[in-house]
Length: 462
Image 1 (cartoon, rainbow, N blue to C red):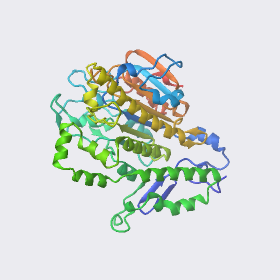
Image 2: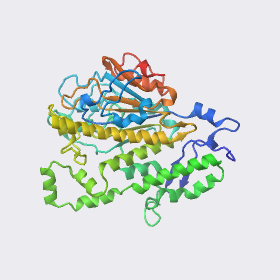
Image 3: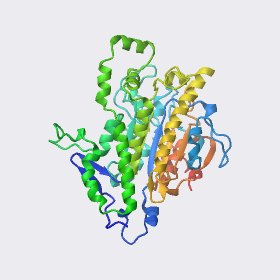
Image 4: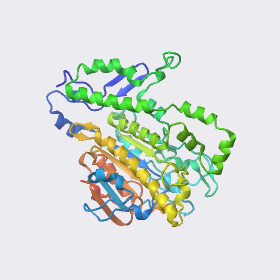
């Protein structure tokens, strides 16, 4: 047993650092059984994972319906979490792309808001509603350091896509705090880590005492040792596990300055050759500076998981790529091109095979995140059991640009509010917003309507 009770909002602090903590037994009021307290008071979490350019249709949908189903080739990496999954077919974002003039932007931007966006080539963007995750953040955000955290890999793109007459800004965001305001995203693991654990102190951010030059754990270790003296054995073990998880991420970070230095030394001849091969410079830099995209994605996922585990936030989102993402996937065996081009497969067997391999890679990364949550404990339950994690795309098939029968998976039980372990098939063109109403209700938010919803998707609720 702990020697005394500590506040749920206890932080480890030091010069330029402030580290939120996971749920500890010492945070349970005296005289109350910790297991029962966890059961009633462990907060729920919501995470959104978006991938661009759709899926190879015949490799996505599982065989069998209800609880008796077999995961499809694309979803096979999720096998260890089959009992934690809801796989949902025939959902459609009904109000998007009503003009039929755009394949991507009108579907990406409103993926979580479910309204048709206002067409523009300028900065006067408007998705005509806030996103579902931000509605959740409005309700729980005051209880955490950050109302929500948004992560991505690609930088925000400006300018106009002349092929369709839309600003590319619409392709860079799925989380909207207001109809005109996309949420700022962290795209570099170093900055994402620093935002979560470090604090800039006026007058102390330069010179030899610059806290950004020190390990985060070195900064807070004195405070950690002080706290540890008041913790029971179970809490001491959890603290050790948590701090080691933070240290593991910190050791794997590669400074953005290193990437910029490498890019600065790329010769014009190399740049010309990269252009000929249709390889983006940022992809070439990442691969050759020791930060391949898989490593970067998993670092961002580790930081994302730590943010949820420490209760620094309860709402996160992550974008694997922007609209029309042309990320080069030649690092995968059997793939010889970029994502968007391959997604326009024209039913070519070779391109379809490469398309499926890219889809599989995305699912592997999602499975990695679920595994991290499953290893993080709150009482007798894992963080995955306490969370709901949406994984999906705003297109069904990249070649046809259809927003019908979207590839959608929800993982985690939301503290027992979701009835997982199901593959469900709904009537054609069931509003995607119906799922969002159910997810918000599972998140204990009393809503009956969202976007163009016409009912609550009760089938997913426990």
